[in-house]
Every structure is written in C-alpha cells, then in structure tokens.
Length: 294
Image (cartoon, rainbow, N blue to C red; front, side, top):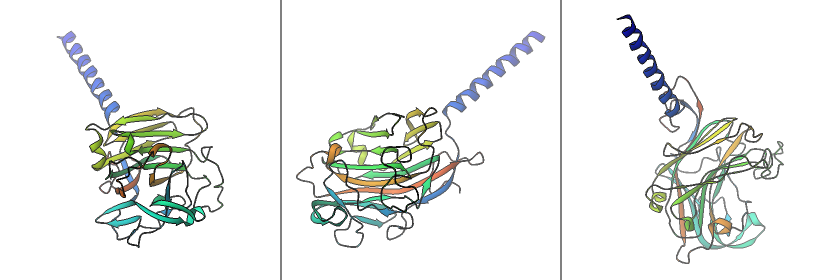
C-alpha cells in the first residue's frame, strides 16, 4: 500500500510537471497597453505621426506627400481606420526637389513621437489590391537614423548601422503573390529574411490580419494572427537594444515592387490600429489592441 501511494504521487508529479512544461512552451506573454492609435478620429493624429515626404529609396516611382485634404489625398482617416492611398497622377514632387513623378502615396513614421524599447508592437491591417507593382509595409527603424524628422538629437546615423537598424514585420508586393516578408537589416547579420505563406493564398492579403513582433534584448518573435511565424535569437547581437519607431507606407514599383500593372490607378493600405504593449505579470491579455488593459 505504501509503495502504491508513493508510485501514485510520483506519477501525479510527473503529470503536473509535463502539464506545466506544455503551458510554459505554448502560452504567450501577458501584456498591458502602453500606446495605441486606433484611428477613430477624422484626420491623422499628427502628434503620433510624421508624413515622411523626403523619402526616396529602392528605385521606387512614387512621390510621398502630406496630403490629407485634396480630392486626390494620400491619407484618409474614416470609419475607424487609416487609409494610405497611392494614386496614379503626375506631380512635381516637392520632397524630391521638384522631380516629376507619375504616382503619389503616403509614408508615416512615429519618429520622435512614439518610440519603443522592447515589448509587443502590433497592427491590424489589410491591403485592397492584388495588381502588380504595389509594395506596402509595416516595419520599424532604430531612432537615431538620419531620416525625417531630423531634430539633431544624435539622429545622424546611416542605415543600417547601430542606431539605424531595421526590422520588417510585414512586407508584401503584388508580384509576390501568396506570401509576405519578414526581414532584418543591420551590420552584424542578426536575423534573417523569412517569407510566410498566407494559409488561403493571395486572397488573404485583402482581409484584415494582425501582425506583431515581440521584442526583447535577446529574442525576436514575429506573429501572424497570433501564430508564431519565426523566432530569432539575438543574444549575440548588439543592435536592436535601443528605441525604435514604427513606419506604415505604400511604395510603388522599385526593387521589390516591380513593374506597375497598366490597369492599376489607385491602391489602398488600410490600418485598423497600431499599438505597443509592455510585459505584465498581472494582465491576462496575450495580444495588444484596444481591449488590452492599460
């Protein structure tokens, strides 16, 4: 009888240990909301964002503007979402010293206004067009990069040096079809590119999906609709240990976007919210959105 009791206790302890191990390896961290833009107003909240009008990279063909008022505006906030519109229209691009462009579009960044060090950064978004030539993205840059706005607060570092590294949480392009890209750019080759297939193919890009990164000094996890896409060990990486800011943009053409479909005249990236959360042992929330406790 004594031996039976001991054996039963041992089995119970083993069962409890295995159960605890499973919980520890499958459960998300718990979060509390630190910052959010849920786009519930009638215009872009410029205390959160800057329209990065001087950006011209990767042989892209658009002119980024700050226009949210004209009939051909590139930013629209309505019905609880942000829309970044790319439009086929001729323009002498002010941010590119009057260079003539055939497309306008939008690029928002939160530099100097909403910068984060570690935690979970999450956005819910969709892209409404499947034609070739489009290149929307949700991503982050280290905050000392020499890009607009320049305030002279040690933000003179060239990409992708320490202080100016990049993490791409979600990038998609029309010619790429049913996958999206996650990627890292830095001088130490920390992290790698990973392309994740949409479960139902290319049509999934037109539906609202949640994209997130969970970030510590030693580890990066990237999620799609709360499914772990990939995890990177950054314990030997000296970058990504200082504040970063968020970017939302819709590029046209360029090295990844490729040739723009002749039939395309208007494309839209729609964003429901962008949020940042910090780890919390007292919160049950495993995602980061409007319902997450502050």
